[in-house]
Image (cartoon, rainbow, N blue to C red; front, side):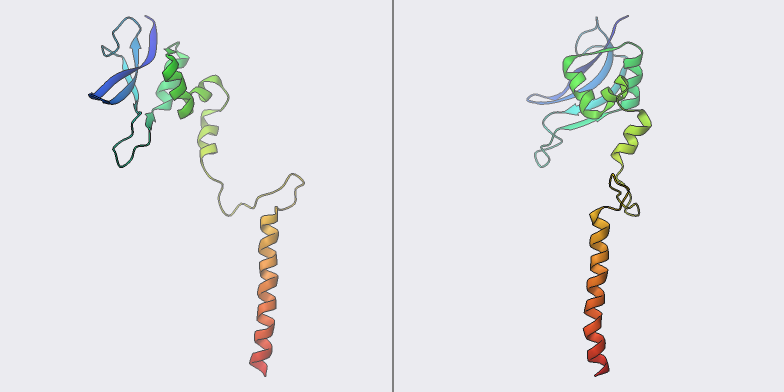
Length: 144
């Protein structure tokens, strides 16, 4: 059985939403499918929020791709947007993809290529020097 990853149209007239599914290639577009992998709302969730919404279970999608499922052109573009295609191709490891999305913590100081702290840390030290200069005139006024 040849499995395709494709979109199934849902929603009302003129307001399409799609399910991303794994289906037998011989079944009709809106027919029987094996598993739902995600949803795609090209017009957004509502008029107040018109941005395109894409929700994909990347683990399921990568599992189907590794088992030989062929995505349609549109689904391949959506998988690239969600990051599942990169994981499948091996460009990004599954754990590295999650780590890349996480922002570095504030406790970590950025380090330049030369191994010296970045100018951000130097700006903090210059602020300390400025605060010392500000406290010096105050000390003289307090003693006078």
